[in-house]
Image (spheres, rainbow, N blue to C red):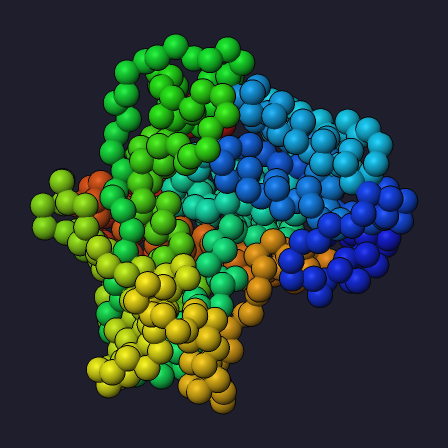
Length: 449
């Protein structure tokens, strides 16, 4: 383990209680807060997701962004400009210290960078993250944390060997409504849960878009990286600056459809509620007409609980004595067929709020709960606190790996019609599946994981 510098440790101890970013006057930021007291960051992948993260980082006084990286020159230079302008304003003097790179290897090679934040397309996550932890960096990596099962296993092993702090960006675990929903399940408040519904969009499809002319300044070969070198189309990497989530995630070549995109959120919560972190399903069932089906795949857990992909409410736990439904900003708790607490639609559920309904549920039904789950109020702050303490964060790599593997197993039902038994301890099929599905047929240009 590479220890933090003593000055940074003392600073983070004093900042660990903070639950939200804050802004100090420029004179304070420049004079009272020495650079050695800040956690230094390199940001890799400057698309829409990182745009939001970067807005948070540059407001904080406990971190400093030293580098940004993207294969698109326009996005890369825009991110550098944003960082430099923010730090110039805070310091009250010109700051141009943020470096801009095309190649992530230049970021992780810098010894003055403590941690990297990865928000590239999914097919790059594992390779970059493994290289980062081997270089001694702590990592915050967006979900889904890997493109396939093999990468999840390799990344988990690399993180443990390097003894680094690794937070997966499954931020629903840091939202109160999801934690309380899972505590209701874990403490048996709704009885024996035998069915879970998870609601998100469609499985992926093969990439078939026609070739289009690229905007100058895009390193297309590097964008494709470990994946196939396909013809350029802006659905994969939109030209210049954009404010939407590109559709590479809908392709088998570079993503896993909404099964890994939103499934990495909702299946993650389902496994949290079941107590399956670091574990997983034991069986996968393909839907009828799997070649064209968009819903209906199932995962079965060792205790017989069946998780089904549906059009529904988000994450729904069905127990012998009640139900819990939860989504972002939404919560519903039912006992014996009667709604106990609910905030789902602000136009319908007037006179109350999400905070009120969730807090009262916790107070009335979990006051003496035997199972208390990890309580994080801010996903990135939790990462910072764990960098200081060297503890595992709320969505450590073991959690993120097991959740994304469950998503990949579900995808086998849609892509291959898999009706198979699965060994979660070995991350392999026991019967009925093909272990060749666990990795790519071929990694391109030496980018093999």
